[in-house]
Length: 232
Image (cartoon, rainbow, N blue to C red; front, side, top):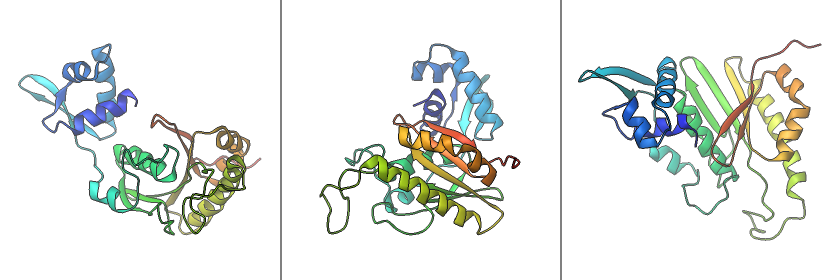
């Protein structure tokens, strides 16, 4: 977990607010400046309020928080569910946390466990609408249906390439639903995904799609931000 994410978690758990010195001490940061710079950055994003209490500047979390019931009831795997970090439900959970920490309100989350149709994640911020198509990494075994538990014939890396194609088509279809909608694709960090996405990077940019890569540690990298580039 990054220092930024640890600070966010600490402020969410302490609604009375924490000053930079206390934050640095509780998180075991090497320097107070690490807490100070990130809290000022969060304040610029409108997620943290810095105000004086008793003559000392405290940081208060004012950003949105996902309702626990929402995450629990839509099939997103709880911590310790036994599913690997790269299972789609766990990737969804990481993306949801990333978005809410940046001011997005989660409107809907599809039930990963049952394969519910529709957008995996739909979020709003001001007048923006964001739809995220999420993929996990394929298991070597069937996870549902009559063959559950049985080994698959298709190699996971081969199936992962098919999932990129599926995610890309779905993203384009969702993008065509309205000009106000920003569409993103999210994948766990595996070579088959990162290498294939790098090969089609220019085409994805021309289409105006966002791409998020999720690491095992919970890190989220925005490898493409959805900005369109001119066609050659």
